[in-house]
Image 1: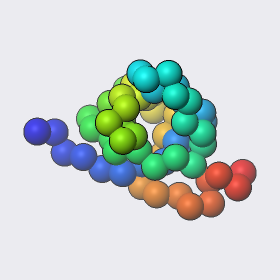
Image 2 (image 1 turned 60 degrees about the vertical axis):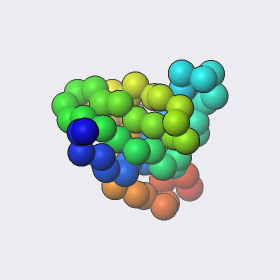
Image 3 (image 1 turned 135 degrees about the vertical axis):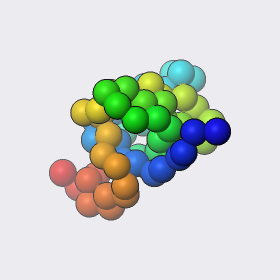
Image 4 (image 1 turned 45 degrees about the vertical axis):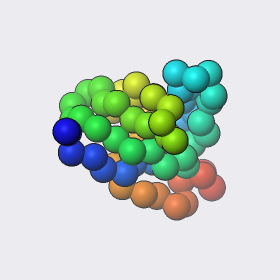
Length: 63
């Protein structure tokens, strides 16, 4: 199994389910590089490097 880490969305991103997650949403990230797999409650979000930040940023939703 690939290593997992937490991240924070920087922009709104649609999941495979059709739900759009707003900036500030905490995601579980798998992979490294320009694109990664991210998950929110089992919903898959294919992310590009510019759509998320590694780690948790509680103030990001206030921007």
